[in-house]
Length: 111
Ligand code: AMP
Image 1 (tube, rainbow, N blue to C red):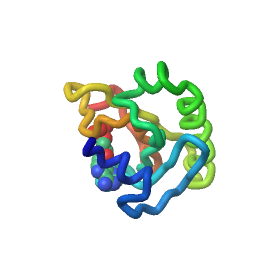
Image 2 (tube, rainbow, N blue to C red):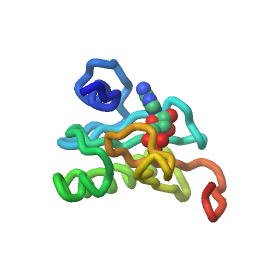
Image 3 (cartoon, protein in one colour):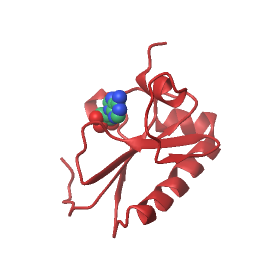
Image 4 (tube, rainbow, N blue to C red):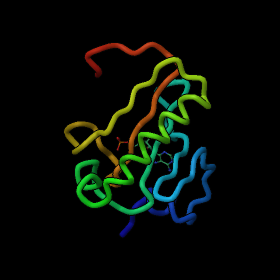
């Protein structure tokens, strides 16, 4: 399988990890949409958040506790977390990942 996030999680593509735990890593998004834009990614391959919830719910728990820890480390006053699911919703990498965005004001509804 030619999955870019599998290559990052297994070290094939050297990447600076801001967090590494038992099941999850976090690294900076290549194309940041906010002053802080991190991706929290399970080490195991699941196509999207729902598949991850079915296959490894503990990874989802770790993703959200790591997001909270990172938000504190990056001094974010508030933050937005996003899972895009499906190309129609903007998913472009089909290995589940949580976007963690902060450091600017956010509007609602999102674009
Ligand atoms: P999504 O569109 O929700 O699937 O998000 C995929 C995200 O991965 C996008 O925000 C991309 O900028 C980001 N991305 C793609 N390739 C890399 C990479 N090699 N390193 C860091 N971020 C990446």
